[in-house]
Image 1 (cartoon, one colour):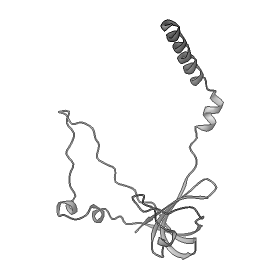
Image 2 (cartoon, helix red, strand yellow; image 1 turned 90 degrees about the horizontal axis):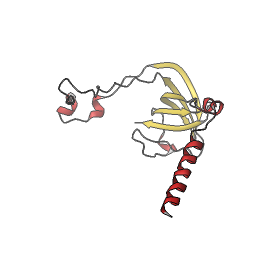
Image 3 (tube, one colour; image 1 turned 120 degrees about the horizontal axis):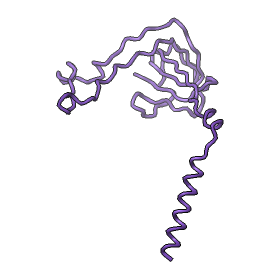
Image 4 (tube, one colour; image 1 turned 135 degrees about the vertical axis):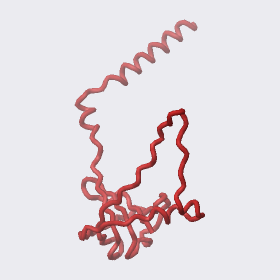
Length: 152
């Protein structure tokens, strides 16, 4: 009985692995392309209900994190503190970034059901978007809004 059960389980595993590994190349190549995402970053110049106008800016480049490669002795480099942290300040103040506006304006309607979020991902209300707010809006390939972030 034990031998029959082991043989049955082994056969089931072989069948499972064989069926999982059998994919066609045409399916894999058509679904391997990531969806196109557009982003609009800038300062809100006007708000009318769920329609906003954004003074577009170039997205700021984020500072690259230091490499986490081991040093010659196999240890990791110690983290360095910014002057604001050393003085007891907050890191956000030390990381303010200047933005360069393009001179273009984009009008966007935020559909019902899209909940704006702040920089750390907490949900906000559409009414939290005001003239002067810095926003980053993500859309799909058809320019449908998928996510809204407010940076105030």
